[in-house]
Image (cartoon, rainbow, N blue to C red; front, side, top):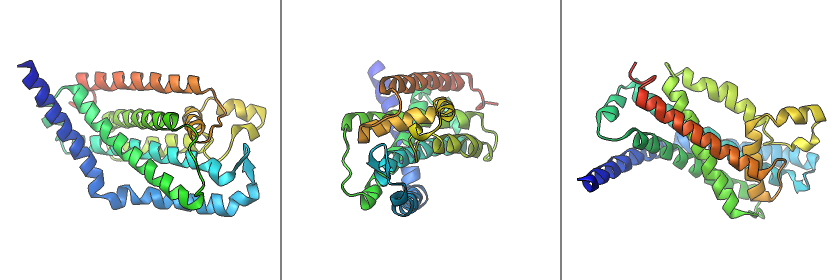
Amino acid sequence: MKEVKNINIFITLWTLIYKEIRRFMRIWIQTLVPPAVTMSLYFVIFGSLIGPRIGVMDGLDYVQFMIPGLIMMSVITNSYANVVSSFYGVKFQKSIEELLISPMPNWAILLGFVIGGVSRGILVGVIVFFVSLIFYPEFEIVNLGLTILVLFLTAILFSLMGFINAVFADSFDDISVIPTFVLTPLIYLGGVFYSINILPDFWRSVSMANPMLYVVNTFREGMLGISDVSISFSLSMIVLFIVCFSSLSLYLLNKGIGIRE
């Protein structure tokens, strides 16, 4: 009986994951093409036009220095956007009730939406990486293991954040407030386009309070072998936040906060 139940959970989980992946793949022109076009513009403007005037950053060509930051920016925004829009969509359409009354456990519901966000985030990240090779074909990844690890952990973290945002959102406007006024400024000030070593002491200290700095620099360490922060500390904090946000998400699902109201 228990084995049959586990099979049923696996089937329902796979169905939810398939639905989430198919949702953004069906409209790939809106979900996968825009990040590639946007990042191409960044490479053209900052890499090809402004980059030669800047010269080097931390001993690297400026366009090479930018690549990890732009990939991470794409992963963060797309992982977050996929889950927040998808989960709020099922809330808005009242189809969330079908999930809640089904035998599918809450952890499987959360996992299904998170895997959907992670899939889109990583797929966009890979696309942006291949776009970057057009502008810097000699790029080589220094530490592939760390790069993949940070890529997955970051996609998981921001998928969970998108889920929490969707739970508390009461309108479509609410799902755009956090990305516009919180995520975007923190990402731009998180060392995507510059090293904090060029900042005055005061602003360098302020930058250390930006969580995006640790995510971007840990990924840059994996790709380029350079970082402005402690890698072990950064990885520990990313894992800690994943555990905290996972626990909070499950608590919100179990209590029905923002869902059954």
